[in-house]
Each structure stands twice: as structure tokens, then as C-alpha cells.
Image 1: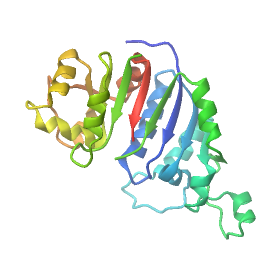
Image 2 (image 1 turned 120 degrees about the vertical axis):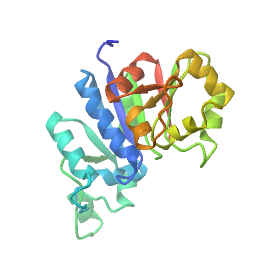
Image 3 (image 1 turned 180 degrees about the vertical axis):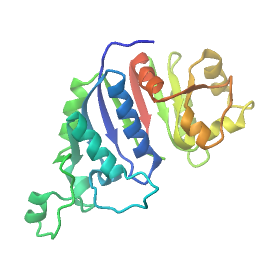
Image 4 (image 1 turned 30 degrees about the horizontal axis):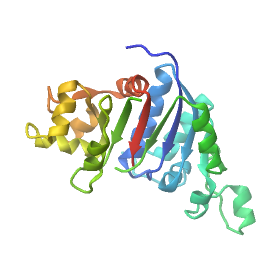
Length: 135
Length: 99
């Protein structure tokens, strides 16, 4: 069945090691390929660990950090990471690393650190919110 | 409003599925993905609420997760790919993810 284009917000609360994160990416890819729009992708809780490309994975495994970054770059998507959840997990950008005197910034360029308000605002404008967490 | 409930955790690790079934409205649907598809292994002796859902055609599962976990029960559940999953989210008025 064909549906009129809708505006989606996708929230990810699971770590990159969880199948839920991969499912979220595959869902997001399908949203765009089916002609819908993604207003914002929001990472929260352990989901914030999807916003770094620093981890080194075995060659035969999907590198979700890289896959998310490429997907966001390719489609120029609005991609936001909850700053409070990110700070406590060491996912810092250059500004936060300087502010807190940490040696490294690990946040991928595709993502922006911001607050939970960004999720709320996007939900108000969207037709659908789909969250991915658990297993 | 017709709500699509999205479950991803195994029914054997917590009571999420039970809670969800208690809250289901008449027009609601249930989408199983991840470890939640393991509930299909109990077919044909599914919980009565799931049987009602299946009879209404409102019980769905993500096909790749069913295949990965060998939980393919044809005729009980509607198996969907990602494009169909997206369409399902549009079909219902809202999506409630149990995370």
C-alpha cells in the first residue's frame, strides 16, 4: 500500500553492540528509500555510542559508527546526540573536551551534541516517532 | 487511535509482552522484532490475546529477525521486510516502542 510522505523522528537508545541499533539504521534507510522524510535522528542513553567512529571492529563485522556517519552525511540529516548521556560515556566533541580538560574528542562530524529538548521539539513536528532500544 | 506496539525483547526475560497485551486496544497492532520473535516458538499454543491478534491480521514480525532466530511460523504472523515495516508505521496512527 502507498502512503503519503510522512515525517519521521528516529530515536536510538541501544548501544552499537545491540541488534536494535542496526535495526534502527536499516529502518532509517528504508524510511528514505520509501520516499518519507527523517526530521531528526536522536541518540539517547547507550545509543550515544553510535556517534563515534573510534572503535575498531573485526573486518567481518558491520561498523555501525561508520555506517551511521556515512548515512547521515550522504542524506544531510539532522542528527543529534543527548549531551548529558554522551558526556558520561566519554563521547565528547572538541568544545566539550576543552571545557572539561579531556585529551580526546571522539564524536563523529556527522553528529551534534545537544539536549533532550531537541527530541521533544522534533516529536512535535513529526508524524511518527519510532524508538529503538532493547535487544 | 490505532497504535502499533513495537516489541524487541524476549518474552522469557521480562513481563513486557504481558504488560503490552493487557494494554492493547481493539484496533491496535503488535510488531515483533529482535528477541521478541521468540514468542512465536510457542505456536500453536500462543497466548489467547496473541491468537486474537493473529486472527485479526494484526500480528506482525520482522522477517530477518525471524529467520535469524528460526522462528518462522507461516500463517500465524505477517512477516515484513523493512519497507513493509515503514509502511506499517504509516498505517497506524502512532507507534509505541517498548524499549
